[in-house]
Structures are given as structure tokens and as C-alpha cells.
Amino acid sequence: MNKNTFTTVKLDKGEMNIYDLGTIKLHAYKTNDFIDDEVFIVEKNGKAVIIESPCFFDNSKELAKYLSDVKVEGMLIAYHGAGAAFLPEVSKYATQNAVEYSENGGGKALVDNFTNAFGEIFDSSVHKITNIIQEGKVTIGGIDFVIKQTAEAFDIAIPEINAVYTHMLGHDCHSIVAGAAHADGIIAELKGYIAKGYDLILTSHYTPEDLKDVQTKIDYLENLKKIAADCADADSFKAEVQKQYPAYSGQNYLDMTAGYFYA
Image (tube, rainbow, N blue to C red):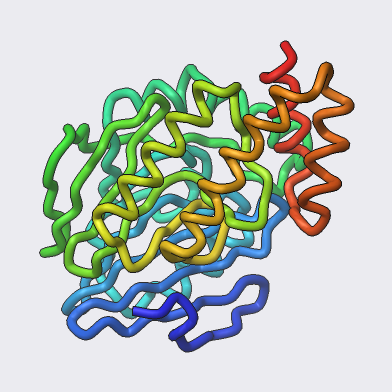
């Protein structure tokens, strides 16, 4: 499977990249919203399961219209709890820690910040979870998903298409790294993806990526630790990272990373 082998349907605001994988189609919805959200739809035999939710009202309407010809069997809500106006009648699946993250934890803080930043175009309402799920296999709409709980929410493997969903990767984008120990944890997780040989890595803020992109991210994180060890303060750290990675996006993430390394 090649991450660039898809057909594109242009929508009014966003676009849909469709991967035809035989019995399953993967629809990757690029929202083109202010926070570069991606939403994924796994379709099999006319039934669909959605991974994450759009959180701007115009994207919600656009995606609901796109999905009008399939039966949506459920929605997996991991890291993006906002956007409850989107398909409110559909069953919502999440682990208990993901519920707490969205309702009371770091996810709620992000929703509050986005609400202040974007105002009434942002749907700050949080999805009501109807089905609490555990680690391991869960079958929705005839499709098997394998749930792995994380510190904040959960990641999702999709065995039939040899893919995994996690919150963030971004091979040419800075990431939020909460110190060297956190970097080591991310590296270990990414090495696990390589060991399992996933064809696609799906993330909330980037188009589908592959294992070459995973290795690029590992190299970046290892180098980030070295730069931090050699720099005395946040400003010199950021300057050196920007010097070595001038084309990377996500300056706000780099600012946050510097804050963690030099708290």
C-alpha cells in the first residue's frame, strides 16, 4: 500500500482522499480548518466507522452530507472530543480515560482554548460517549479495531488494512515533546510501528504517513534530545532546532516543547 495512491474528491471547504483497499475503503478527510484536523472513515460493505470528529460547524455539515450514502455504524472518539453537533444519533465509542481527558483533562483545556480563539464557528460541545470500550479487539460495523490505551486516550489498529491511528506524527512538523523521557516514550512507540510493519499511520493533524516517515520522526526526536542537552536555555534551543529544521511547520509546538525541556 502506498500512502500516495488515492483518488481525491474536492469538497466546498475540505477534500477527501480515498484509498481503495479491496473490501475496505479508507476515506481521509482533510478539513482545511484552522487546526489542520483529519478525520478518517473506514467503509466496508456499505457500512462506515468514523475515527475522530470534525470540530468546526461547516466541516461537520460538509462531512455529514458526504456520508449520506453509507450507514454510519459508530464513531471512535479518542483525542478530539469536541464537535458533538456532528451526527449526534450515531453511537460513540471511547475508553474511560479518553472520556475523562475530553470532559475534565487536557482535552477540555484545549477545547476551552479553541473556543476562545475561534468563537462561534467552533463546536465546543463534547460528544456523549455511549459505549465505553476496553483495550483489545472491538468490532463495529463488521470491522475489527484493536484498541491500545495511551496516557491521554487511545490508539487504534485496523488489522484488515494494516494501519494504525494515533494522535500525532508529522514527519516534517514539530511535535509537543514534554522532555527527554517523553521523547523516549514516543520513540519506543514509533519503533513498535516499524516492528509491526504498518502500511499506513493515520493521525489527527496530518495526511496518512508511512514507515519512512516514522523513521524520519525517530531521527528528529533523537536529535531533539541532543540539541536540548547542548543548549542552556529555551531561546538557544529553539534557535538551533529552527536552524536544523528550517522547513518544519508547527512553531507553536516547538514553543511548547521548549517550555517543557526548560521548565
